[in-house]
Image 1: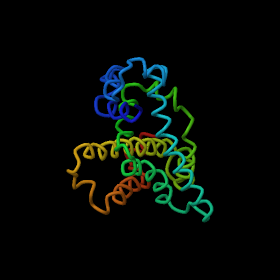
Image 2: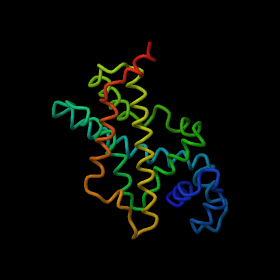
Image 3: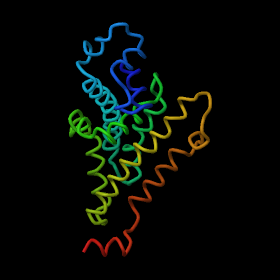
Image 4: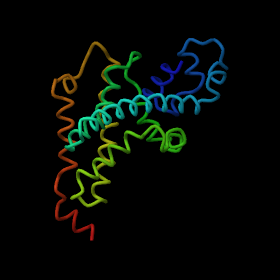
Length: 208
């Protein structure tokens, strides 16, 4: 039922899906089955949010721990890889099909309080470690500018890979945008350029 619900939320938005829709799509005869298993629609959404966040955080921490064991991170690109790859991986390894990032985007767009209630500062240890590494490696960039850039990288990551998920619903068709071998590396190139770019005179002037 969780996979079915996540797909419906990804495709139709949070408010576009009712409990009855989920129960019917899951092939359940008992309309109370969702309440029995999850308590409410909001609690189901919370479980789905945590499921995906745990996967991303565990993968991110493993990459960061390995990096630390090797004496790193030494470069912004190393941290970016640990930051982005776990999110990218969701779009290629989910057995039920890729829907989590579109679901997550819809929650963040229309139900931010629900996101904060279930995730908040939990399940983001890897995220916070990445941000600390960025601050250390890019200490020459003014803090307000760097913090805004890091937020933009996080937003772009969810948005870009949400878009990547969608063509998978129309298999076997695929988009040339995502099938090129260099795609992930090229995305990382753009993020790195955004983080390391010397702030313009216009930006610096407005910091005063």
